[in-house]
Image (cartoon, rainbow, N blue to C red; front, side, top):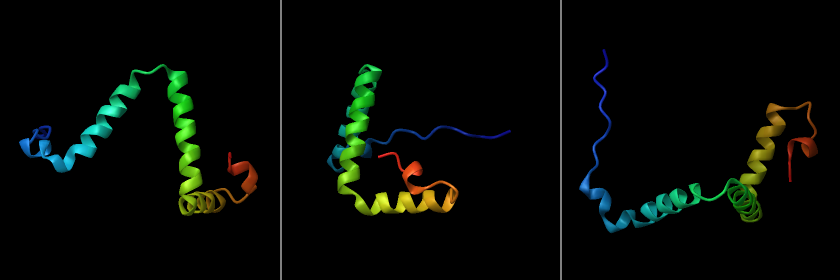
Length: 80
């Protein structure tokens, strides 16, 4: 039998250095209440924005897809 207990909340998590984390959690919680269609378009827009600014990550993802699926062309594996 496992003696598992969930971690306890620590008062130190309310320190101002965790403010950005709490804001992010709060925004995700609020976004979860939005209709699915709005979530979809917001995620799509955020993905396109990240695609523009994170070129190195795009290259890494494209390379991983090319290595995992060599029979697929890069144009088919890439959905942009």
